[in-house]
Length: 403
Image (cartoon, rainbow, N blue to C red; front, side):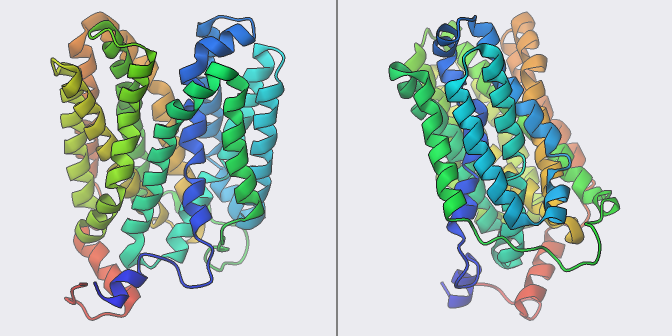
């Protein structure tokens, strides 16, 4: 591998980049951390498991709603200041969850967690996009998506054992990560130079609309898979809580393991071909998980979906963050907002369909990636445009191949 090829994988020397990727862990981790310990939370706060399960929704809806504007606001307030304040506020929110005396206080603290995280994830995507040369952007965003997958995989593996001792202990881990990031903040670029506030009208462009649609459909399918796979593992195969937790972790583990490769494929193929490939893979994984007659095939389907979702996260982040030069964080936050709206809506769509139609209802989740393939036909600037911009930023002659 040439020195130039290795250089595009990372920002310039002197930039503290590792917190940018570690920060990607927090959002997915915090969103699902209550799921493995719903019963323990219900007992501890003297409520029912059904009410305690609302902790996922009370996190995701504020998270998604605030991200509609959080990136644009952060561009106006300053990325570095916004990042540090939001991390400290997240620590406070974790403390409120630990100290909550009733379920109402607990759900309010979960909503605060969602609001604070809405001001971190899009800033990380924007900073990575600004710091890393375009030729290595796919690999950088692939690694970021891998850290998001790691957060999703770690959630049941940390929260479950913590709940055996005391469910409140589960909030210590994400709070500690946030404290470290606040004390050792990542290098946050100020974004492109401009006069006046970040442009909002610039967000009204076709490629960002495509990123939002792909993001929504990706999580509509992915969260549907995670919920329905757990239901199927219990009803069809009689798996217990620990077995179901390990099965669910296959989603994040597979995504983390393949993230570097998926990032390289994005650099080589461009967003259009990568998006098509990942959505085809997503549809296959969903059908295998829904219709496979064994636990092994169910787990295989979950892992395949985890790989596809990680690749789509990378693709969506790349399309969104490069769609609006004057308001990168605003574009990233808007696409991420649609992602979590899709995740929040998924149980409301797929669980009743699965209850009424069984395996066919589960298999219907594959309609989401099919719709995404239709959307991809509207992408402006396929892989050739991506490669051409890459060569321009590296000052390489057209046709030069990286080694």
